[in-house]
Length: 248
Image 1 (spheres, helix red, strand yellow):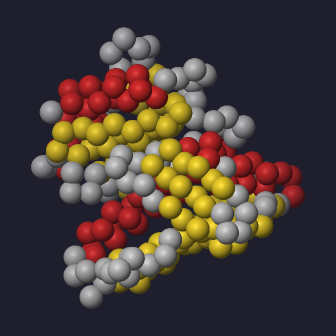
Image 2 (cartoon, helix red, strand yellow):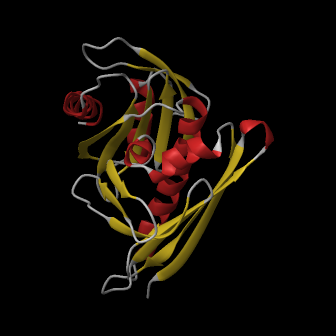
């Protein structure tokens, strides 16, 4: 059967159109709020490439209007699967801007509901992370960190265990103050900036720490580390061990 979808996210942010364009239209910018590693060959007809775990998507750039509009998407697959992203930027007086993101496409099959739910929750988290990035980390670029924990069977219990690991008495909620501790590292204080049924995002002074419900799988750490000289391999190893300890 399948399902056509469209989701729209809009926010006014304390960032200039130049800062927003850098965030959405360059590889290092996308690395700092989306997921995995990204490359951009700019201009209409160019390509946006991603790498997240074993997933290697490529999207053709359909519209490229610097500081104003960016549209890219993939060609429909044999089963009709497709996805496209449209970003619109509008500068405002005083240095602020409005950013609008439209995500649309088609999910094939009779079991599209679970994938749509995960995509919708993930899209909301990624957009909120974009807003956090340009608000609190504009001008800085992050090392993306991706680590996979063990399979999770009971998600409500897993979210409660995450809360305990962060110094809370329950599942993280937006606005909670938390404490992030990795073995051999100084503890970091942070605030939960976004939460939904499938994700939780935390902002510290030098990182955005996100926990994602893997689609039919594990708890995933998809972080952005802004510490100068951060080593992705070392960060991923440390977080993998942390996930194993908390959710194993």
